[in-house]
Structures are given as structure tokens and as C-alpha cells.
Image (cartoon, rainbow, N blue to C red; front, side, top):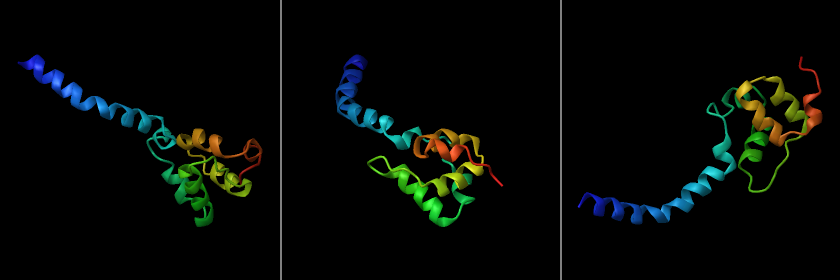
Length: 97
């Protein structure tokens, strides 16, 4: 009886597997646990908006170099991998003041 119940449960949940896999493969799922909150809060609104648009855009959306400079200078360690995905490499070479 218990085996039959488990089998029915598996059959009912099997169609949800592609949805779970699609969610896990999405770029939003790759965000760090802190979600770059400090980085977004410590840059001007125009730059924070550009960063958020880049994160949630369907296509690759690069962040402008002036905005990347500001984002990188916040130095939030949890956010570096995200910034590397959306900022051009030259943005990492500028000095922070």
C-alpha cells in the first residue's frame, strides 16, 4: 500500500521536473545569497537601475563602463562573480577613489 502511494506521488510530481530544472538553470538562480544588496544600495539610482535591468534581461545586456566602475568599487565580495558576467574587463582596471 505504501509503495503504491509513493508510486502515485512520483507519477504526479514527474511533470514538474522540467519546470524545476528550468528554474535552476536560469541566471537569477545563479545570484549569490546576498543578491548584491549592498552594491545596489551604494551606487546612484541610474546605475542601480542599469544593473537590475542587466540581471533580469532576456538577452545579454552589458552594463556601461561608468556604472561598472561604481559597482566594482563597492567591493562586495559576494557580487564579484555577477559583475564579471555583465561588465567589460576594462572596468576592473580602473582605480577606486
